[in-house]
Length: 149
Image (cartoon, rainbow, N blue to C red; front, side):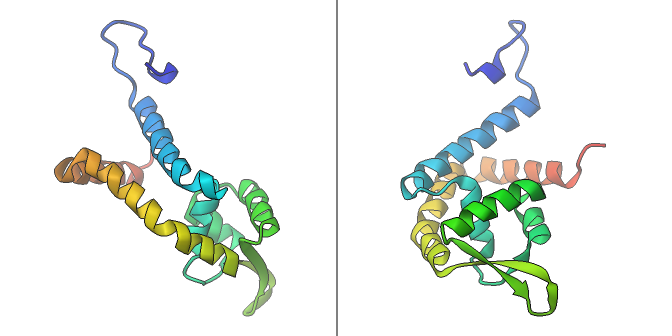
């Protein structure tokens, strides 16, 4: 039994928060098995996936899209620029703003991995079955739409 699901009593069930955390870790681990051999961390994949349409985003918009804090995203983008996966450019509409774009190398990495990632995600849904997968998706979407106070 994993450490986050240790039970204090014989009949205590794991908390919902613990189950959600463990499920997230497992889903990320599945992605890491696909992305790791290509040297791409999951967070970098999420950025590439979001920028793959070729439209640049401001750092704040990208932070919202990938659900990261701006300081953490800035460091991640610095590493990705260093690896030539993304590039920064001034916004043509507002020279004071900087946009982040996927580079040709980043786009090629995305093309190389997107089918494997899609298959991994499909496998996760298949493990649950169609009906249970739809129900879990509905419950999680409802949960995320109604954040706690």
